[in-house]
Image (cartoon, rainbow, N blue to C red; front, side):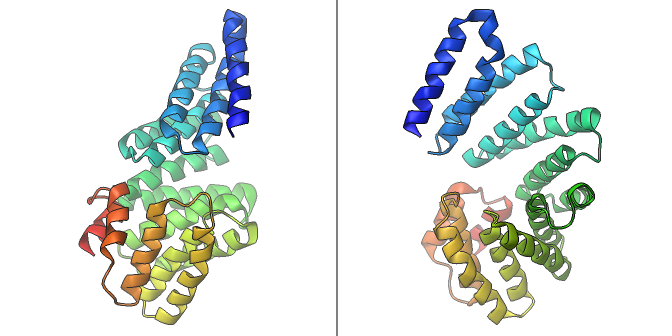
Amino acid sequence: PKEGERGIQEELRIDRSRGVAGQVDVPRDLEALGKVVIGPKDYGRARAAYNEALAIRLRRQGETHPLAFQALNELGSIAYLQGDNEAAERYFRQVLPLAERVLGKKHTEYALALNNVARMEIERRAYGPAVLRLREAVAIQEEARGSRTGELVLPLLNLGVALRGIGKERAAEAPLQHARTIAAGTKHPFLGMTLVELADVRCNLGDRASALQLLQQARPLMVNSNGSEPWQIAWLDLVSEQCRKVPVDTRTRAVILERWKPNTHFGRRAAQS
């Protein structure tokens, strides 16, 4: 990664030195730099790089250019990883009307925008609006790509979580099971979290044996994944401890609350455990 970053920095230096002619390539270089520094979780630098790239693209190409969509989505994702949920939702909400206007409401990029906004609604426990957006996102992806595409994993996972949020525990099981099947077949990085959410549902519905088996399957997937955040492992621990009806470890609670405020989807349960 360090060597890759040095190469990108050199390209960026050269393109900047070309003045107006280099402005075509500078945002591409900045976006490449942003991707590289996300790897070691240098989110501040990644966000700064994407912000600069977006400013250039907006000036040169306008807000309706597809690459501007991508930059806004990346900025939303980085802000989310930083724990800046308000900024993440602002970025994602900017994409939604642009995708609708430029690409139409049946395009998969519009479905992605729906999923991203809904995810942020879940985080602040606005589950009802999230359910509506996610049903639409799932329908769009299924129509465009079929019922087995990996692009369905996240909206199905989020739909299950949102349905649980409005008290529809049993209805949540079907989208979570569908997400699990697709994630297992596509080796999706969110298979572990999908198993945790499905286990939580089954435990609450009284099937503790199945739930604990799913949690056992989830652990190595999450522990061995470079993409797993510490709070996600702690969430697995919290779900497991509550399913086994043992006290939640104070360290488990602390790790979750270090990432999530007590009034958020994950933080509230940790705070009340």
